[in-house]
Length: 442
Image 1: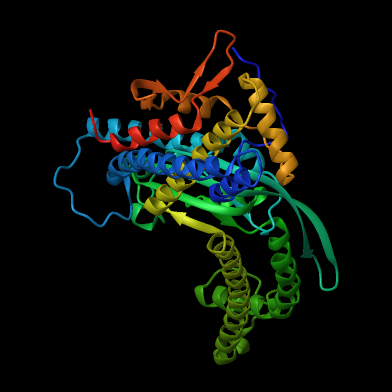
Image 2: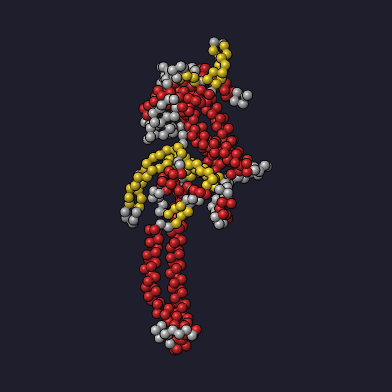
């Protein structure tokens, strides 16, 4: 077992385009002019080969996702039975997880999400998410950064705060079937999602405290501060109003008691026979009381609705401006990212083995690539060496040497001291060319 250096403050993600890394390798000065041309051709064929490989992943994911796709527009010739659906879901989860790992995404557990939910959000809302409503939940991120932003606290007071930002986040979730919600006496028609369906989201630059807004089953309500801001003025306005109408209330009670023959002290209630005879003013008093209370209630209701609309706008802005893709398009985007990432890793490994003046162990190669990235691009990464080594060792094909055909040779092998042995560039190009030409062969 090879022990690799582990950096808790680094990620395996390579934050540069594949084409830029290829150009950087060529400008590095370690390849001759002839080698540069051959290296470009090798990179082009290798990129095409891995594009083909990941297209297979995409077809598998699309096929198994279709029964759970809430946006499906095509008709189904064969409706999968429950056993088939279970098998398709299992294959879907396995394929998506493998692609996420290939793209160097890091899992966020449910416990990590719940810890993030406890941190105060920029959007001043009380939120709740019921994880029991999910049949499946995958949450992965890539890129953890810190940003300083300025927030407005009061009229003239602004405050700078440090926010943890997830540069990209991928969420896959499937809700439980309608039976689960019906057993909870939930009207399924009022839900914002379709029970039993899967939802896939791709977001960027999401503050960790705002992660809960990415889930479609989020329930929001006002915070205690908002309730006090509405409730305290309400109580303050209600007290003088009640004091003002209290005599009218007593008067109405007295009249009703007098007319119904209850043995109440109508004098104490300030209702006498003359007052009872003059009932029109009493009716006006009742009407004015209800109008006053109704107007006050309506004012408080509209205040609450305005606050609720602002909350919804804040959430919509958070999602809209940070959304990359959703559902099928999100899965296609994930495939693109994974293909790019895996190819970059292989090319970096191949280039550094090709230009090394001696055979390297995996540990030495890992360290060399990390140092090169730091030196050339001022970027510190925790390079994942084992994946690209395995991929290079799996690529096998034929090449011609001194007019003799050499069959079934891997691009990469290991000697008895577990040092990496790479085929020369010309032979490597022949092997990858052979593999690409026979991609559809037996």
